[in-house]
Image (cartoon, rainbow, N blue to C red):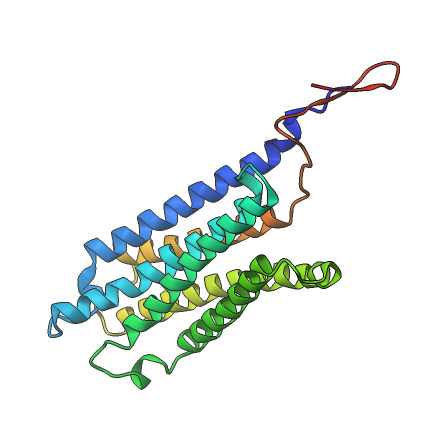
Length: 245
């Protein structure tokens, strides 16, 4: 009986769907940011303020959510040793954390001041999400480099690391959804954007794309792993002997 590579097809399909969802989200976000820039800030404000306003969703969605999602999927697609996978995972999460910090920093650059940009549920959830993500990354960093840690402690910490990682990722997506809703509601209330127009359609599709991406990433992360090696294939013959080649 030969261990077939077909067992990895479900995981491959989920990875493909995750990449397609991420690509769709990036395209929709870039389309919104590049073709509807007047919706981010009124004409009376400076070009500098407009750049900061556009950078915020780009850094938080593409830099934070998409890259952190890719980091979660690293053990599913990256070949090589466990140490290599951990290092790439840690590096990608570091890039995502840096993007999130700069994304929040852009909100401190507006003319309205700091308080004016941190009054809503969206802003509070964003601060909580990035704080949890930073603490999670720091714990992962210390765990990765301190090899002398007791093995049982590392094993007990792993389920919490996985849970907090997936929870923080889901929280980031929910935070982005509240941001989209807040922005679109504000624009429609002020009459800047109509309820039935191309921009409203793009923003709604962006929200659906993020929800789909979140579900696929989490499903891929919790799906059963296939313990197979690319270098060895085990064959059991009729005599119940195991041959490796």
